[in-house]
Image 1: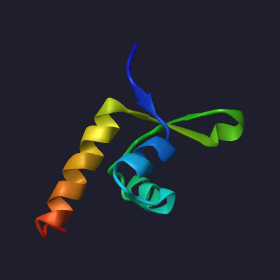
Image 2: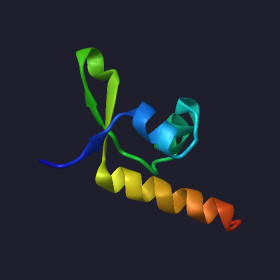
Image 3: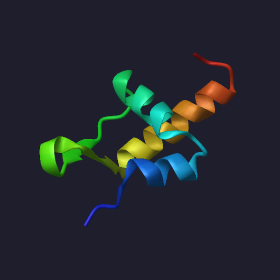
Image 4: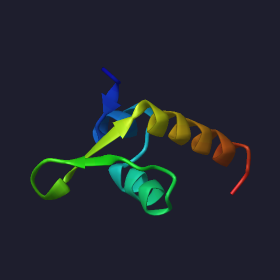
Length: 64
């Protein structure tokens, strides 16, 4: 079974707000699955975690 993360899990791990996580999703950098009633819950994959890690690294290096 693949490892999954909630928005709170990744926000805490990378010291981000959940709003920042939603921003990266809106920009198309993250593509979480939607679950729960009305698709309210975001389920992030290991691939999303890696993409977030690389995005934040690029941001630190001054890339936009």
